[in-house]
Image 1: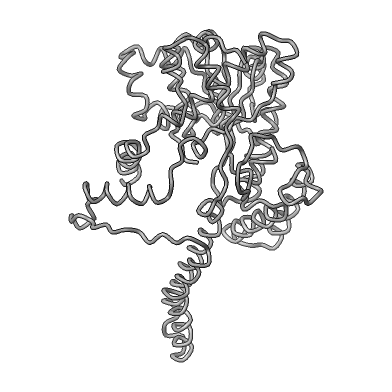
Image 2: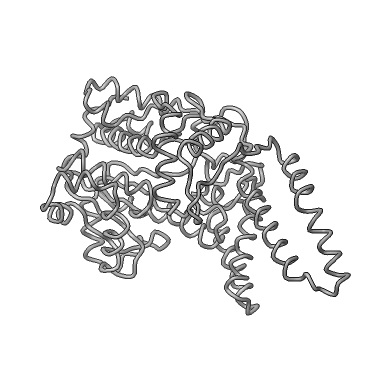
Length: 440
């Protein structure tokens, strides 16, 4: 694969970005505007009822963030005019045909101008309702693909997903695509349209029972888990991301931009090489070349909060200790049984003996334990994951970028996980970021 200038490819191009208020999308948009201000236009698709609401979301959830401070410093009082020229906010919804675009003239304008599409829209809730996850993660990707097929100028479509669509495989997991209808456990009959019909029928049944919205939500969550496990996937999120390791987000965005440019160049070059490489999976991760382990995370957290204690609501430093790390689900169940479940059973007996006197306490504790067990069941595949993600395709992409001979761009779009100093990253970037933006 030969790779020409990435900046040159992006120059004067029109790019559609879906899920524009999402985590990766914000970083992608800021990076493009900062390193290539001569990009022609970025269409930013946001879920909103109208353009006014979409614009408000853009300014509140994207432009106002600290991430855009370098752009604000660079452009100063001219920032608003620069943003107005380069960004076009679009109210839409990928769960609908034609991305939910109501303005037909705007739709035609986009179709005629778009050179590249980066689909970053999705629900990443591991415990999502099945109807929501299926419409966004599965049908959404299908609608984006159908929209892309109508764009005569389109050079490349980048679909961003999760490597965990591979389920609970062990060993080396290759960068290989799944084919339509393929399942992890060999069960036949998986089909998008059929799955949508099954989901809609289940939802109608629940709504006909005059249940509360909360009850319907829980039932649809459970139904999603049931459907996922029927075909070999551990949860609704990775299942719906299919039928369509820790790494810093800026490296992921750099990889997205380089892949977009590389395949865009292949399109412009044409020929059989382009056809042969028209669809390639890139797993952007560190598990092969520079893995970080749970024991490292435990150590980093302990050292950071020992050195810089978190101040509690009472104004006093919160003392931290070493976290108990359990090595298997069996050890976790033993721990829960000894620490909580035996007490819960005893409380149930006492509550019965004392004529439901402790009913409130029993219900509250039972609810909390069930909540924890549900979370553990959802995240179990990742806590005890025994696979490593192959990145040979991604390494070839890195080599193409290095061999392009454009030193400035190699540094600007660097995405080699071997260069990550995990201790420095967690101690000086990741954990301080959590403290600043999450622990409010």
